[in-house]
Amino acid sequence: MTPPSFETDIKPMFRERDRQSMQRAFDLWSYDDVSQHADAILNRLQAGTMPCDGSWPPAQVDLFQRWAESGKPR
Ligand code: HEM
Image (cartoon, rainbow, N blue to C red; front, side, top):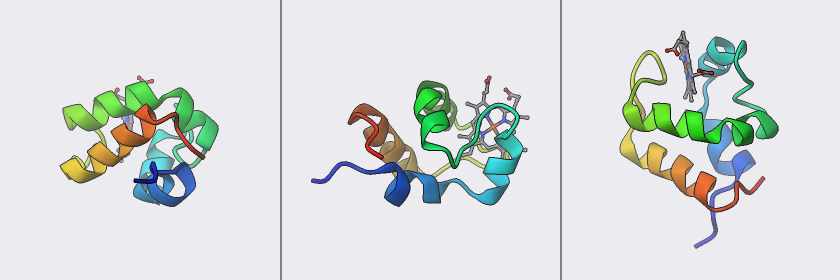
């Protein structure tokens, strides 16, 4: 199976609202920022404490985890 890529699979999961809310800490539409903060992001997604208005379905969290663990392809 092809590993997920940032542009095709990961970035589209972040809504405009997510990006704006988190802009002070990092840019969720930036490959470099999301790669750099992937551990913190994954922790929050798994804990269900982000996004602030409702946790992601498990399939989306799994997809992010697979991307982070497969070398973060662009
Ligand atoms: C999928 C979307 C989101 C992800 C992956 C995400 C991720 C994170 C992460 C990793 C932190 C910790 C940052 C740090 O300590 O440096 C954080 C903090 C925070 N986020 Fe988000 N966020 C998302 C969406 C949102 C939304 C929609 C809101 C709502 C306004 C929000 C509000 C906050 C606030 C207020 C904090 C600081 C307080 C705290 O640590 O709980 N985020 N977020």
